[in-house]
Image (cartoon, rainbow, N blue to C red; front, side, top):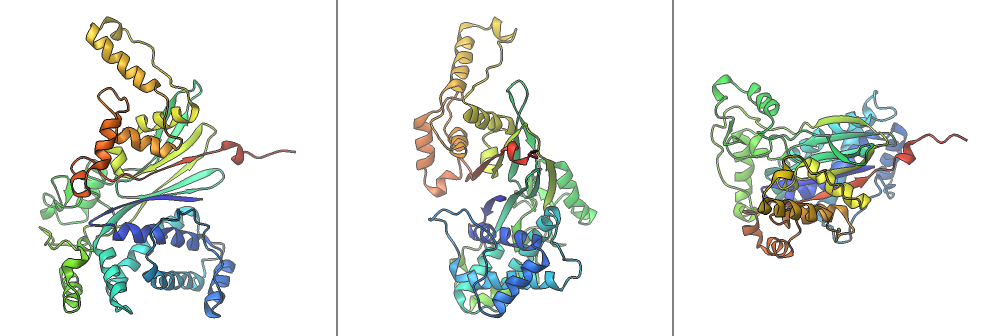
Amino acid sequence: MLFGVFDGHGGAACAQAVSERLLYYIAVSMMPRKTLEKLEKCMEHGRPIPPILQWYKHHADINYRESASLYINHLRVFWQELLESEEHAEGMSPAEALDRAFKRLDSDISLEAQVPLSNDLMKNTAIQVAFAGCTACVAHIGTDSIHLANTGDCRAVMGVQEEDGSWSALLLSDDHNSQNQDEVERIKAQHPTSERDTVITDDRLLGVLMPLRAFGDMRFKWSCELQQSILSGLESRVDVDSLNLYQYSLPNYLTPPYLDVTPDIKYHKLRPQDRFLILATDGLWDELGSEEAVRLVGEHLSGIHLQAPVSRSERQVKLGQMLELLMKRRARAAPAVDTNAATHLIRHAVGTGEYGELCQEKLSSMLALPEDLARMYRDDITVTVVFLNSDLARPHHR
């Protein structure tokens, strides 16, 4: 199975396109030659293509229907190239497929914004997708292992249940932002030493972008000349402002590209104590630590709220401090109001009070904020919680 979360910036266009397309690129990369040949024959003879993926989609999910033909045509070019490769027999491994798919889709997004398209709507969509950006965190879960591909500052955390019933968090991804010193050094090493002080300023790439890897964001990848030619080619036919493109020149834009999409890929062998996987955008992790998120889901799953014993220092507290301690413990033991674990996490991320208790008034006010004002108080949050059944992965002996 494949799971993913996608977090857009500079508008929703890139995240929308990547969420619709990336899993297809991964699936095609893993398909054996015989399956790809069947797909190609169906396309050649105008027959319906057998389903590449069995999607779990909500009926209200948005799709870029106008661009569907463009997307399938570029996916077809991709599998044609795989068919021409002598090395592609049984399909790629999950790790190879994830890496190849991320890079190929970003390349196609760049290409689609540069070539002539059949109508203005498709062209405008392609430009918006290319100039917006998005981060992505995708998990390929097999019967006995997980491959995790991450580009940007989404995060994947494994919920582990220890022998004593307590919960611990195992990080399966690294955040690609300025808090990750290895990532900062990686980017600085790609540019002249004269740019060491300007590549990342105010904890942002060129002082503008928070994630240090992403899909799209061609303003950080293309040369200035290419950007100008693309935008000037539009101006005669369309109002560029209507495309919601941010009109600014990046400071110290001297040696592009400054951004790439290459994912970090982690492998994890599944164990019986691995109970669930949390995939979430940075909006959740701004509010909750990894350990706290795992505890919330773990206790939601088991219905058991483990309280640490009163420590020696806690026994010597004053009456006011004791009340605070009791309030925090009561908040932890409060029954869950959500049947859905992801909703449970979001509720705690945006609706907890001073002692960690759920505060309906705060939650209501946070959710009622207008979109432009909400950004001052919270980021958008997307969460998927995948529950793992270790019994399915165990060999059954007769």
